[in-house]
Length: 145
Length: 145
Length: 145
Length: 145
Image (cartoon, rainbow over all chains, first blue to last red):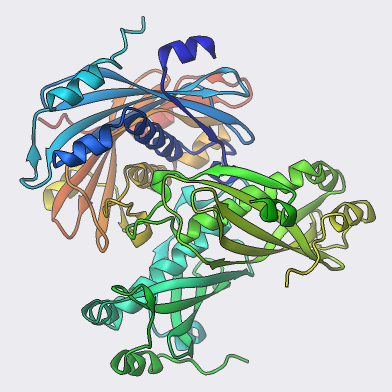
């Protein structure tokens, strides 16, 4: 857990719901994308990004997302889901997510998402404003070997 | 199925998704409320009620809902979910739902919902407009003994 | 919250996920039944009932459930969801659920479920074993006027 | 649609549920992984693969999955979700998914999944049996330029 917290300073804790398991009796694959979404929102919230984006008429739009499953998760368990910035582009950035199982004391799932900045009025991609870029850059993780 | 169609002239067909089953390997109880919602929206749509309500600044708000489970449903199956009007009040009405399993050829689940008319600007209950009441009255089912 | 805790001594805390909101921008009605399920499992777990039931070859089966919505809930919020026993029958019992919103500091939703004891080998209803009845009776709430 | 059917001969039709939309009023990203799962199961079913795998004591396990979002989808709509084989390895294969929106008459979302063969008794990866490999090879799609 310590190494996980070093890798993901911004985390949110999520209790596994029994009903998130599917007929194979572990958490269903689609549910992890709900967890990533929760971690993404928590990340934006902690860095106060949503208010800044709204003020500039920019919406962060999910263009791509993926998950890599290492260990199945079952109820009951508590998960710590961390988010960080992996790459910063002109008009987009990528985040990575880590799902740490408290019961198994291991990283159960890894995730990734690409988020594109869209100017709401024109409905078109727009560059990441400098102030927001600076905040995101502060959460850039060094490569995990 | 014929008797079901007599009871519920307005129906929507829904394929069961494998992922809607839970760890007990049948469709999870919460999923039926998603099915009822789909049937409710389909009912409003078929009777062209949403447009009429919006035009009058009224939102139909769910105040209560219930389900009675008769038979577990499993994947693969197709469901016909019917909706009708059970009671018509001053500012509210109740709907009943029936979930018919094609594989089992039987009524698997029964549902009910109370819908209250809310004037969007004032945020308060309001009477059902006469034109809408007339449409709903046309879908009132006689009591099922 | 104090009154809520008096009414529901057994509670579980659930963070609202952003993705649990629907297009009307509050928590979708079906999600509350997931919350009730989580509270029900937590209740069974806290009273060590699941192990006792399994040992006797009995499965608790949900035969009916309902919700009454008092206040819409939105993200972000934390919910305390309490469960207690309302009635105890020969082969079934009813539970009531309360969903307390931390942000609104009020009871947002009320729920109810009927749970039937089923002998797994025969697939038929069976009486509640005395030891389990005694535990459930300890969680019987006096009527809320 | 014709080009889509050429690319994905095996398809399943899924009606969009209103409740699958999130607070941004389009289908939530996690829901697409439910759609992919439905298409995957349908693909296995159509090629009669599940029975053959079970008979050999092999479980197909999802190790990785991703989605690329091109167009938001909203209720009401019907989707055709196609699945095909992209690559065949020793003990794994990758599938690609296409989600075609009937209302927009366009490919809304693309998906991918890696599926690993696991010998259930030993809990370890195992090679794809020849008979199954032959069936999968018949669904290999040429590269889409």
